[in-house]
Amino acid sequence: MTRNKTIGWAVFGGVAACAVAVAVRKLVDTRRNAGVARGKRIVVVGAGLGGGAVAQELARLLPDPANGSITLIDEDNFLLFTPMLTEAAGGELEVRHVAVPLRGLSDRIQLVQGAVREIDLSSRTVTVKVSHSGHDPEDRQITADHLVIALGSVTNYHGIPGVAEHSLGVKRLEDASAICKQVLSRLEQAKTESDESRRKALLTFVVAGGGFTGVETMAAINSLVREQVDRTNIAAKGELRTILINPGDRLLGELSPKLADYATQKLQQRGVEIHMKTSITGASASTVNIKPGEQIPTNTLIWAAGVMPNPIVSQLDCEKGKHGGIKVNGCCQVVEHEGIWAIGDCAEIPNPAGKPGTYAPTAQNATREGALVARNIVGTLKGISPRPFTFRPLGELALVGKYSGVARLLGFNISGLLAWALWRGVYLAKMPGTATKVGVISDWTRDLVFGRRAVPMNMHAIGSNASTPAELHASTAAR
Ligand SMILES: Cc1cc2nc3c(=O)[nH]c(=O)nc-3n(C[C@H](O)[C@H](O)[C@H](O)COP(=O)(O)OP(=O)(O)OC[C@H]3O[C@@H](n4cnc5c(N)ncnc54)[C@H](O)[C@@H]3O)c2cc1C
Image (tube, rainbow, N blue to C red; front, side):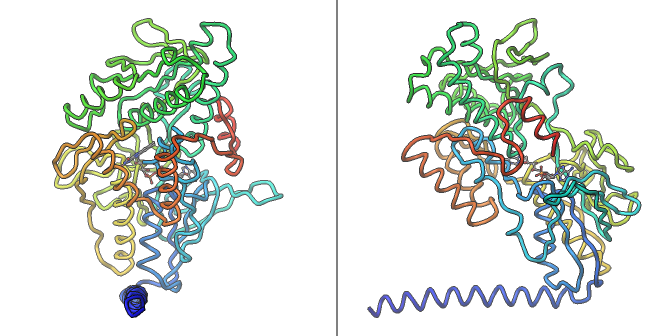
């Protein structure tokens, strides 16, 4: 009894100490920022990993509403945790578990759900198409004193004929749902297909791209189809083809050749055919054309072969970088326009100390750029010069299938089960929101104990229930 009482008091003491620490930190931040100019309007467009980080850090640094408003604009009402998107596509995670509701971020953040149509940099005004239930969507204009552009990137089809129309991307939440749905549908359709060549096309799954997203997508889809076939009598194992197409001469160009070899071998052992130095030259609903003059009969092409800055960027009246992103200085400022900042996949931030090139479009960079820009905006409001972005990634991790991964962390190369476990630990820790983490842990546990129960989520909630490229493109265009 006395022991229980002691534990009870210890827990109570711990919770009370945390509450006091949070209150003190809030008070200190409020005091420290009391001198910040009042009533300022800070607007962040894009609530992804970069924009979400800006808004959250601003809410922490400027807890007093008298300092002004923090407005976050996005066409979705959730933040998509992209590192886990491929697991959702493979049915290992429920699709909704990789989306973090924006409402839960902070009371200080005003959320505007709508599609950004136009940004006038000289007046710092954003035009947003906002929908109200029962009314036609209307344009709303929002003007800022400080405007952060964090609109991310879109799938790049490189203008290859037929690919945009006949492939599924791996970029948005609805992509994961559509991939899972299409893969499972193809298996079902194959079961009742008597024509041999049509059956072959239904049972062939092609992923384009040998980078992180392509490899992880292939690993996830390969596990999904092979587990389904193991459990059911849909098809014979030998009939399945999972094919990864990579224009380069090895996978995972950012990692060492040894880790790339490990990933290649692991995928091949699990039945994946890998076509190196192969480019896709066209696609239709039933074929993928590859150089030189070869065709792969397939009804499923998943495109993970590149991204490009959000198309809105090309309309902006400012200088663009080598990859078409917004050119900013080291502090993430658009130099031609005061009070405009840009971060993440839609920006090109120069490497520090005169090193050539710009920071890579990664989540690691976007979240840190976001936090820095928030601090720079608060600093600017206090009359302090902004600081440049400097960050050296701690490493890279990729999943190459069940219980298997590759990682380069703090200069060490790691592969196999340890890399897989590290991947899960690192990304779970990085995922925002306790409730979201619990959802992911429950999916992983269910998968471990009972195996995969791939049931694609009904996406009506976010305006898309597509399962084919055509349906998906139509639903996205209608938003
Ligand atoms: C499948 C996948 C896996 C990945 N895995 C990793 C990983 O493991 N590690 C890593 O470091 N990086 C990873 N990345 C890269 C990482 O996701 C991006 O670099 C990062 O999300 C960039 O952040 P961002 O804020 O610039 O863009 P995003 O996070 O894409 O956010 C952009 C936001 O803008 C919104 N938006 C776009 N257009 C409009 C509009 N017109 N109106 C309103 N809102 C709009 C979008 O809805 C979105 O919320 C992965 C990417 C993908 C696709």
